[in-house]
Length: 295
View 1: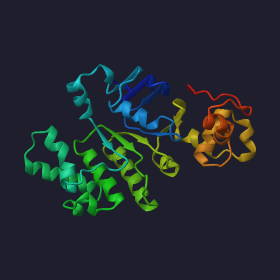
View 2: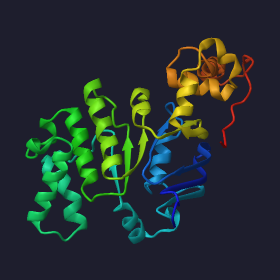
View 3: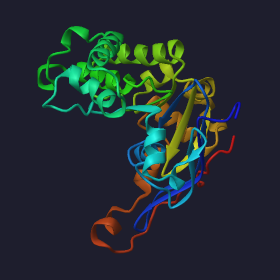
View 4: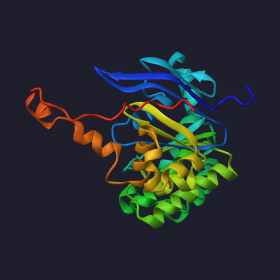
């Protein structure tokens, strides 16, 4: 349907035992946009990503990709959807026993009936897109971390996907290589029209590439909005912070990487004695609860 989101997440709940990792998450990803998902460690980012690629099935709620409810698909249907998207894993996830070129060619060999010469031609094109054509015959152990990321991106592009997922694309990279990856993400969105979902801790990168941003905290979606709205919170002067509610202050602290704020106070409010010894201990008074935004 026209204007239907590429990804639609509704009231998504995921539990591991008694722990609720995602708690009623709602989110849309629109055609052609770059959506950046951020949040602290343990906020549920990676779990949300795994639901969107069909690795996890929701305990309740729905995840639709290209209009298909992933929980209702059989293996054949799931594979059909997966052929329409590519994934850049955090480590690159290359096969060490295969050359860079063979890593990129793998999905073409598995999912198409193309002639081997055509596959070689496509592989060269994809490696050229990420600036790695001259490293095609090298093995992962012979290239740098940044080159591994770019090789992983070339592999993700092999089937010309409509949708790309990036899991911490700039993690562990130097600033120049990180900027190169950011530019590749932007180029793919603009030139190929690919829709992109980027999970990242890197705020510098996030504000460069994002059309919209989403922030998770303790499994809840605190806010999802245009990049400019997050920029306004990030740049809010310290003397005006008292005008923000608790949720906005938490987001501002995360975006700025400040040492003081709601995130820090929340850690201080937890009882070390109770956690360590299993005994009850007086707790410090807490501020107001933080609720997700439906804006």
